[in-house]
Figure (cartoon, rainbow, N blue to C red):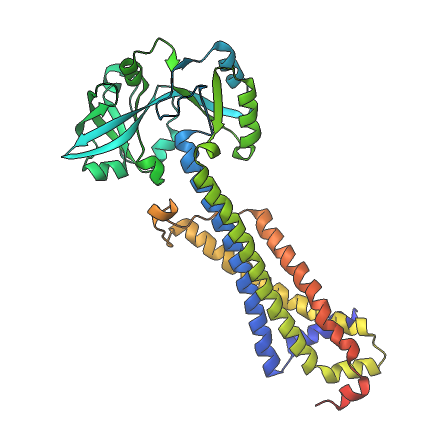
Length: 406
């Protein structure tokens, strides 16, 4: 039988000292709350990043290809996507799909209200999977009917509320050229992305409308939007695409297009690291305090063990075993609390957010097994390592004085 482990078990389970029991419970609660907060912090931050990234890239793609010129306006110069570039995109294993698009500034006029907007034109190759998830009324453009598709339009819930419009309504849109070009459209769907820059900046329509208004030649488009399979490989894939383009074309990633959003997401990582360190310090301080009090209350026992020939390290292990037991209880309860609250939020979305400020209507949760495992391991290792320092106090205890200690 392990002597140190046996004594530690007796102390942990059958101790009748009231004050130390209170301190031990506080220490366990500290470890529990620290771990729960750390688990939820990482889960919420990762959920934030994933949800917001999906919102932006779902509407605008991961990489955009446009003509390389001095045009910095919202309306890109036209170009023809040559066969070699199409082959490059089609054969790239990192690309999920791509589609042509074009944008054109316009003015919406309805119900005595006007709103500046960017008309984004797409064709039948456009992937509607993301938009379908965020449509709150109506449907998508039906490209099977080419005549009807020229008049159909999807607008954001933000724009619909501003102009007091709803699905099925007609209105006039004026395209900005040398002379305003009016066109009548029918709203077939209203979507809500939740990112203000997108919701108030774009409407979705037929690419052929822009082609006709601009008198483009057959095959000319304003740009190509690309969706890659792994967003973590955005930079290398974007660089690879850029290197393979002809000299008249350029490409840029979504992070370059919306630097403010992705810079903000990067700052969240810094905040998370600070919070993790603070919570870990809280847990360590609680355990150190509990250990010191247990050592002081067990001074008589330490003296007796030393008089029986027990070494300082052997007695230290007794208290470290006891601390590990308490840390284990704290970790178990912390995992139950953190994961429990996280799964509850995932299923109910009870904790709401201001979507105008955070781009989301609720706090998102994204758990990863390796994150939870790493937090548990780091907490145990750091706590036990730090606890070696206060346990050195045992070596200073004199057996004779300790036995007399009351």
